[in-house]
Image (tube, rainbow, N blue to C red; front, side, top):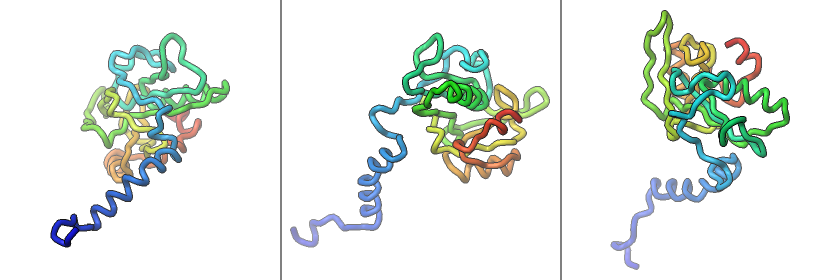
Amino acid sequence: MDQETRTPLTRRRVLGGTAAALAPAIAGCSGGGTDDQPEPTTLAGAGSCDQCGMVIDRQPGPVGQTYYRDHEPDGHDPPAQFCSTVCTYRYQFAATDRGWTPQVTYLTDYTSVDYTVRQAGGGRVISAHLDADAFGAAETLRVVAGTDVEGAMGPALVPFGDDADASSFAAEYGGEVIDAADISRELVARG
C-alpha cells in the first residue's frame, strides 16, 4: 500500500484502539459488563420500597436497587428496590447480616440525568429519576453526604458518576464527597 492510501496513525486512533482493547479486561476485573451481571431496571410503577414500604415513584430524590446472589426480595422478582439511597443501604446492611451477598447495587447517577433542586415544605428536594438508564453501579459512584438537600427519607445521599459533578454539588448544597462503597451504618443512621 502506498503512502497516500494509508489511514494516518493519529494519537486519537491509538488511544481509541487501546481503550477498546482494554475495556473488556477492565470490565471483568470490576465485575461490570459481564454477561452474568444483571442490568438495572426502570422503577417507575415498581411498587413499594423493600425497606420502608413507601411507594417508590411518589417520592423525590435518589433511589436504588440491588440484586443479591442466591436470594430474592419478598413478594416480587429481583432486584430489591428502594425509594431512597438511605433505604438501599439500610436494607443492604440488614441483608448482609443475614448472610446475603450483593451481586450489584445500582443508585441514581445524577451525572447522567438533568436534575432539579427545588424548594418544598421549607426545605430543598432533589428530583427523582427512575428510568433504567439513570442508574450507575454503586462501586463507580461518589456520594455527597451531609447535604441540606432532601429525598424520600430526609437528608439525601446524592450519587454522581463524575467526581467534579459531586464536588460542584457539595460546594453548592453542602456536604462531603465520599465513595459509595464507604457509606457506613453510622452515616446512614445519622440521616
